[in-house]
Length: 275
Image 1 (tube, one colour):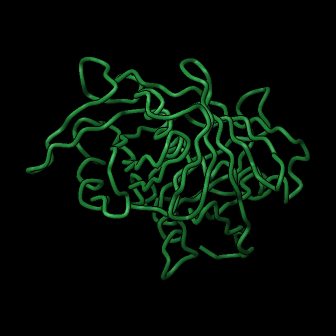
Image 2: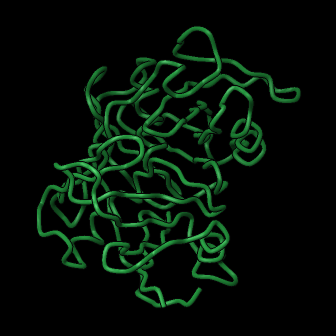
């Protein structure tokens, strides 16, 4: 039997498993089963809490999409990770450093039971995203069927395309998102964000996540959208991001500095499952 915790951050939901105090070796098929909302537990992503690989870290944070693919970053998951290790007594620190496959993250407990994640310095160079273009630009264009799409590209440890729209409620999230996610421009696929700017300190956002389709919230997608907006001169340094599942506060003071993300993380229930 495997002990697990079901958690959510703004409706982006996770199965979180302590792989330090349990022997865990999951196959792709088992991850897909756990993520299945009809036959398993149901989640957007599965998170594993493992022993660190760096001397200065307390844990390693691993993330698997619902389709079983492993990815390097998930902001909403990072907040749930912090809440999980605190609630389980695995760490009593107010600031926790964790290893990921992309970079180290710093997780801090904030006022009002919120969690702030230092998401790292965003990458804008095409090779770092990765994006198959020859020159860096603030905006790129691609033709999808009969539609030309203009987007910004940002890596937050995972690749993001950010498309500005007039009305996020009517944005072509499913059609454009599915096509651009797996376009040859993105050799590792990409998360596709649709951003409506309300004012310089507020945006609305929907995200089509690679390997999971549209989710209620995407923390790294919120960071990427704010970075793209600031780079284009459209947003201030502190921005409220309204996602279908709730609200995040994203702060970025500019090139060379990490992005800070603050939001809630909630435990839904505990359980055991036999695979």
